[in-house]
Length: 171
Image 1 (spheres, rainbow, N blue to C red):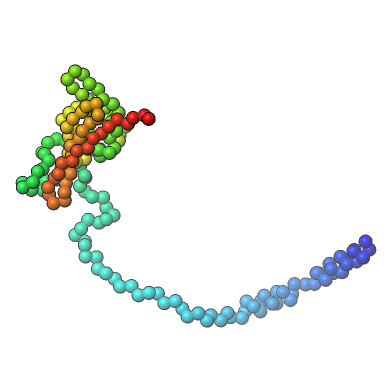
Image 2 (cartoon, helix red, strand yellow; image 1 turned 120 degrees about the horizontal axis):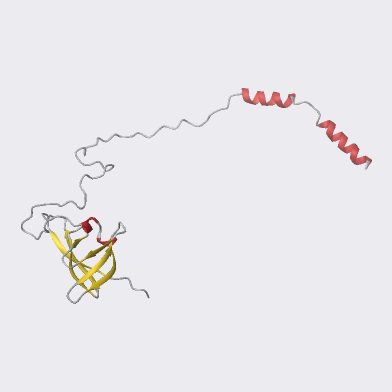
């Protein structure tokens, strides 16, 4: 035990020296300049390109025209929807955002219950308009609701497309 305490005493006296040598070494290292051997990075040259589409709509601004606004392209040589009629409430919703919730019937007529994207449930009958593309209900029966839409082809003409809305079945 005496040997252990003597060894510990010798170690502690060895650590008792000052830190003057360490401070001198740090000051010496900080005072010498560091050689910089790497060449400076030259930035790549950029060519400026003039913005030549100033007359077009900025891609960062919302279009002033809405998709539900009627468009009259004036092509009398091909079929066109009726753009002069008053738009119905359900024509503000895309057809895929309308959910068929139920069908009702009396002896002579069918009605459908559609839930729109606003959460409200609307009662519709044959001949009513819905959807963004001048959709009109062509038929309501036990199989669902048949909607005929006018789809623009991009050249000023319109083509008709039928879409069937069916009730979701629990399986």
